[in-house]
Length: 177
Image (cartoon, rainbow, N blue to C red; front, side):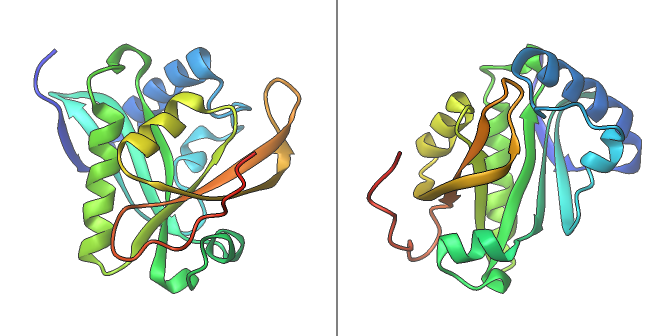
């Protein structure tokens, strides 16, 4: 495999994004339940923009920025209009350990900073590898809460809020479950 390039997602990328997402779902159960309309799932409510990691014509990963919902903004402790949410971050199962997810995360962080907003996200407790990625990239754990859905293995979702390492960091909840 060659050099990884990060660029805005284009209309012609959707089929390759869906194929990459299928490998992630098979390997990691992300998303926990395969969506009835996976293309709509990659275009969530409040979508601002989306990026792909590519090697030539091959899509290796994906990430989106969305408007931040009130619950996450409250958990972070900043107004929603000062935040954007990182969503739909994944890398193709065969592209793991190439820095694809980290490069996508850094790219959306730079885009958010250029727009004067701070990236935030929620991650489910079962995502140990992606939680480790966020923490390696300097994201700060803020708090946890119960989600309103059930994981693939039947557990109630436990969501963790994180904020990117840009500007002043809100004070984290010191009790992490």
